Amino acid sequence: MEGIVFINDKFVPAKEAKVSAFDRGFLFGDGVYEVVPVVNSTIVDKAPFLQRLEHSLRAVGMSWPYSKERYVAILEDLIRRNDIKEGGVYTQVTRGVAPRDFAYPTDTPPTCMAFTMAKDFINTPLAKSGVSIITVEDIRWKRRDIKSIALLGQCMVKQEAYESGAYEGWMVEDGFVTEGITSSAYIIKDKIIITRPLSRSILPGIRRKCLLQLAATNNIAIEERLFTTDEALDADEALLSSATSLVLPVVKIDGHAIGNGKPGEMTKRLRNLYVQMVQKESGGAPASSSLR
Image (cartoon, rainbow, N blue to C red; front, side, top):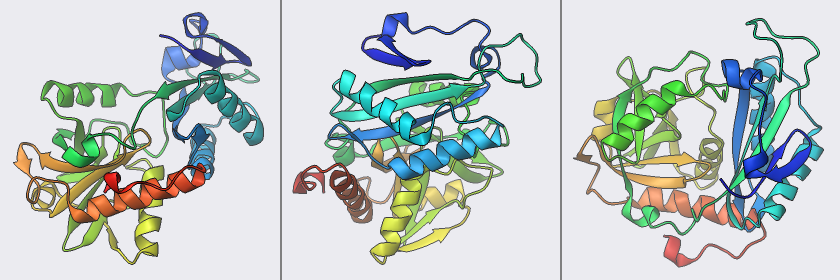
């Protein structure tokens, strides 16, 4: 590991970033996290990032380790120190260090950590080729709206996807797709975007929120409802979204080609709209036609 990491009020080399063996994040997975994209050295989707982190903290009874303004300033300083032009920032807050006991400790300072990741996701070739996914059983806990650091279930099914040669997996529960292992899931049928409605069954994806807002603004029809694996296989198009993939076409599910097996026109348009939005937010140049 290289670069500079922020941990508990200090910026340190990655190899020196350590936590106590008694940190509740290490012992119990007692903490929450976020990943926020960086474009042109600028945090984008900042407001929904802060809103979702606040939701997760409140849901598990934790307070902000810093004011929101200072939190953002710390992440911006970290981006500068690591000279990140494009990529993301991972940040997590745990309940801190305390004797091992399941009940929450009182008056325990939280542990706050963040690091950066460089990634070229705007001009990724995957936007032109599309990606393949598989369906996997959803084996997670019931509070999926909380962005918990306890991710063993996701690790297990992500490994299943990797071993099958897939880019991602879509999790299935009671015959219906919940969401991607590390992304939000959508299908398009008859020019209508279909995605599962928000509930405790899925994470409230930030890119999902932005895409649905962009679709509504651009008169693209939306249906928020459950959809089955069979519906996904019969879709005209499919796509996924996340902080570090933005928007990607899904061209194959469980070995079955979606549509003509190539990125669809509506997916290309949605990706373009999102990329143009974050380019504008970051003060960069407009998205080029090569992104279409």
